[in-house]
Length: 404
Image (cartoon, rainbow, N blue to C red; front, top):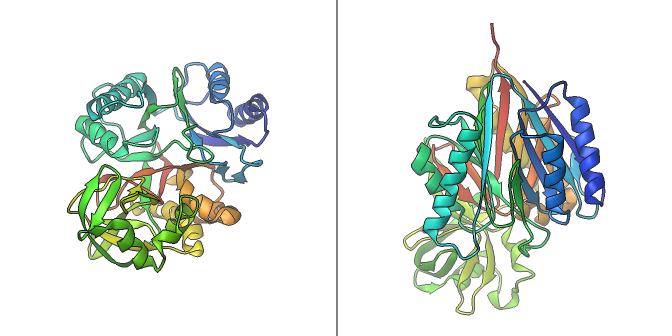
């Protein structure tokens, strides 16, 4: 097994593709068995897809747009918002496959779930492992219905298969995100990779925030809007808790403010230690509700979470460190895939190189990794279930299995 990465910050799409593809091929002695691509949304994604599909004919790949740049073990890659990165693995004992399905903007939940399951079945067929449970599902989709997608995938494989990934992003939450694999491309859709690696994997899903105080119980909600908490307007409860005036907060200021004060829901306990699933407030409704980037439900108990610049910088390293799990300590880690929330990146954008450094240092020895900045994160909690959250990080570390 071997993992390699490559990147480019060229402003022109074709130049960026040529630089990254050439660099990747120079590092690999054999054609890769699986490719991951992340790229800024200001590139021409159709051109990136065609270049990769031509350069790596029929090789399974999954690609997703990232917010304002990408990162690898070499650092944060962004030339005024432009950056492209590739990650590839050669693994003669493993199997990999991908599937992508287009989803219309106004599709109902049943159609979304059907598309997600169809994408997974395609991925299993592509891996030549139909009917088998993958070691891991890598998920990318357009933002909006990630919880329903996880449920749909679990209907096919159960809840013990880890589902890890992130929602496609753009430069400014304007809907210019995109996805592609080796056969298809979409701006609204779901892309799934089924991974059967020849070695072991370790994975983690982490927030990096601490509990500040209880907010109350959701008493009215609709999809991703909390209308009331303890029968009071949700925005009033939230901004009172963080010591701010909701009337002085507008759409341009709520995101950077709420990035340090997300809303948490209990995701479970490990022994006596609680773990939280986060939701990022993004707007205030006319009726005093709070719009989020994750689903909430009546009866959910909410907590105010709190983070700092230092905690957001260090948590990239923490989530990676947690993936270096004890069962695999005698095996050799060879590389990693990382997801880091775009909201956190934007809140500490000038310190993002320190985030990459914390990931690099957590791996102890120099290892290749690639990462994207996403508009929602999916992962497998240490408590044993899959979930979708905001302002979170996921990591998967690949290990070389010793063979006799």
